[in-house]
Image 1: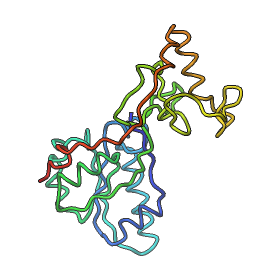
Image 2 (image 1 turned 90 degrees about the vertical axis):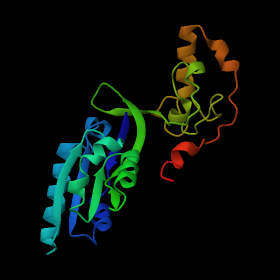
Image 3 (image 1 turned 120 degrees about the vertical axis):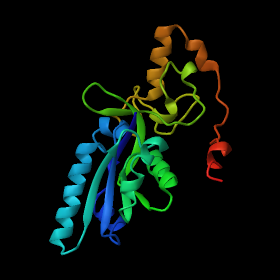
Image 4 (image 1 turned 135 degrees about the vertical axis):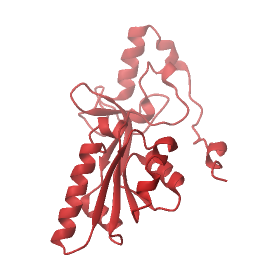
Length: 215
């Protein structure tokens, strides 16, 4: 699950200050589930922008649209004609959605209304916990299915640092050291031998075929 948060109102207003006709586009996938960019959030943001513009004596026309997925050009094509009637698009999708929309529509500027925060899983209490950093070199097979890249404050991949105390992270005493959690999980699975394996230095991988798609 991609988890995102709505940007501060002042930042959004500054982003579209030079436009008088803006289309807000939501996404019906991840950001709808985490309650940050679905149809309801599009409606709320549109109303807030109209009210703010009116109070400041500005002319601002705001359209509303929500697609099933912003990260798929097929769904973006469905709003091409509508989008052509606006000066700019304010996307309430994740960073991937913003970029896909910008690339697909081409001649219309697309701006983000959300900050993409992390990949996470539901915690069972209506919230989400960061569980994946999308590093491209998954080591969950030797860490008991717990990701130290995303869940360790230092993203350590070969064991805990020297600052962990009583099983808690030195950065926050209210947070369990992820390597303590990994140890317990591997102990229960009878796989403690996996802790003897080391992880080569990670390098951020680039995907040329995808980057060159527009060429």
